Length: 478
Image (cartoon, rainbow, N blue to C red; front, side, top):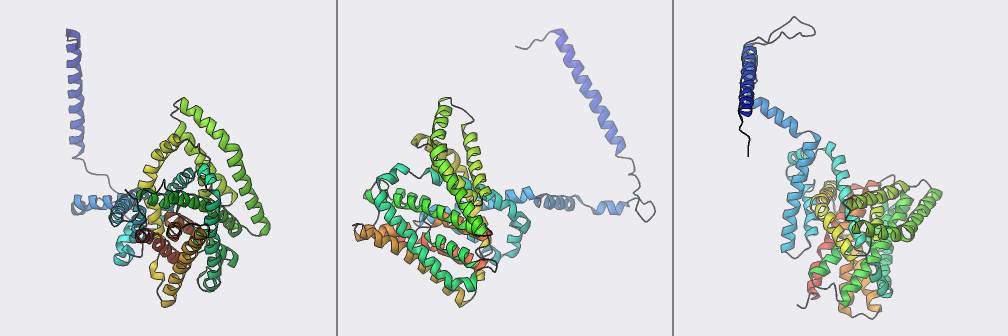
């Protein structure tokens, strides 16, 4: 209860008098100063002048406010915030639309990125695209989107169950490696036709052909896992084999990609050998030295309920990404390995996914899709040869991945229906393909024209997965 003694009452009175006196004084100063004339303005080459009343009245408040608002809206932070708002909302809209037609939501987010780019918005309303995505903002948007992909690759690495792979090693290795070797061979063969016509001038045939082979060999492990989960097939024999095949495919493809990047970025055979040796050393260190120690360290931190656990994990992931970037391959490979060496405890992995995936998938990955869409200029495919080459790429991608996986799965005594189902699932490329394509674009291996063709291939092969599975009646029996 407040003390209402006479001394306190007197203090409150003094306080009110103080506010009144100084408030009145400030008002008097402002009122007096408003009647003063502004000081004369000295011009560099003329006499001292005083602004005329007409000139002062011409700067009306609405005009001034509009100008200030526009200036503030065009500063880099405002542009970035506006981009994030538009991208997240459009991605959410397309994700919901594609969910309703039976496609994975990530497919809708991929299409949303294309729509926001020069292929749709830039074609319909160039001023809108110039306002939303000025060239000066692309570097910031690209870097922020890469953070989202780094966190995404951490989750991909965590979803890799090594024990699961050991239990199904024979069938998984045969099918997954066939789904790499066959499309890799077809991709490098196709490069003989595409290289003279579509490759950038500064790219060697070796780098171009190897990269095309890798791009044809990719399977989107996270998308495949989600499709199986949505259809209630995760715990079935077919689902287990498909997940194991995709996991082996992921590991093998990323290791091969690291080698291709080392070759592409090096200045000679010796430099590429050094880079590859460093990559192998880093992989060995992570699997045999870091993995056992990080499991015990995280177990201790969990027992202490340490609030710094998540911060420490993020620092570790970014450090791994920095190491692989410094070695000469991509930062994403380090993030993927960081996920692989995370403790196998299901509760911990669920905790980490829940903390990281919600924000990265909702806010950061759509930025990556939009950034990819801004690079994809479908208008560059503007003649019969371009579209013929695009259809040829799609045909080779499907024939190599779906066909190769199906035939080898059948050779391992699986039924035709299960073999075709494995082939269809392995043909899913999704977000992982876009990650690989952006790496090739950044390295200068892919030109803008063939980049657009490969993005279309990624979209088509991912889009066809759900309809083909439905055609094969591959769904839950519930």
